[in-house]
Length: 222
Length: 221
Image (tube, rainbow over all chains, first blue to last red; front, side, top):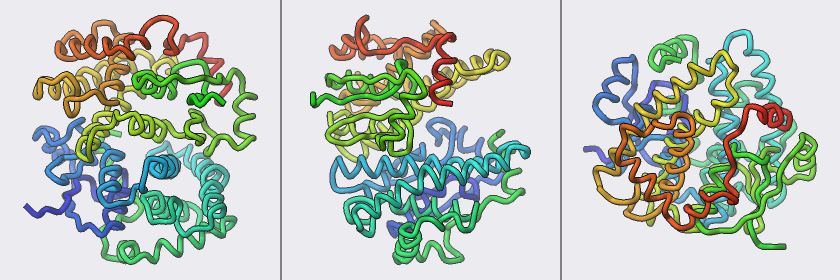
């Protein structure tokens, strides 16, 4: 037994990507077992490995953890990326839920009917630039620190960087009105573990292409 | 200033109900400020009270907390309903996330268009009885304890009870094949703070009626 966490998912971003980011940022090496066809998922289900018959599933510390947020919270707490007390946790949770909502919109975009794509993309850009980014820009401005919460790197910073990069893939200059977020992006990208994760050859997954989406639809019946 | 948490939402269950359950289970008195019209929501959005311009919002311990999970996590941790260590938290989180998924399905039923309602109902019953209930039935059966995690009352028990009751509102005999869950339901309903919350006159909200759907849609859309 390797002792490394083992991730079970398709070979793409989806709901597992935030988990890859967090483990990578924490400097934790992990293995991946990819679901390539429906039979792979069925095998996991029939083997009793998936508590609610769903992935993501991460084998970690003797547990077969499921549910993205449960997994992320466990990793964040274990690797000291969850603040120093209840109040810092509360802020981290609030910020992370915001970036989760934004990234969720982006993630589901390729699965929407083709005739709604343009409208949904416009909504993503509107939400990013009027609802979400202003909040983080203001948080950084108000306290003037390098990190969102408690003057220390946390899950909230890693999640926000992931969201920023995903949003930039939607619209290259989406950060143009947010100078502090631009600086934040530069700063957090330069943290050694994250810098490594952002380099080619890492376990970071690319944006989904048509072929991947078609396969996802088949495997998950969506 | 009363010092009691203050909940901002419409006068109905929605995403605030789980928070009401948790506070009630913890024996914490709370106040409520109801949004009746779109203007009420707009006012809160404009005065900077809502971090992401959304409710639920709960004023608690000097914070204006938003995001249902963040609020629930804070309350659970503060009132010792979140397990004793990281591993118990992990189990509680997994169970709660599964329960939330079922809860969302149940909550969404009233908002389904008429032509989709029957199929949606079938999906609810299928998921409840094939995906979620068997998991919790087995957990309780395997360890034989009164509570889901760590032999101690936690938010997982509160949230499971809430969802079991909602599922029964959808289909009264939905627990027919789950004897252990039936006992669990009776047992947790008898926890004094919960028993009180289940009595008429408490701050527990009734299911949303068809006639109120329009009103709710107007506030949020």
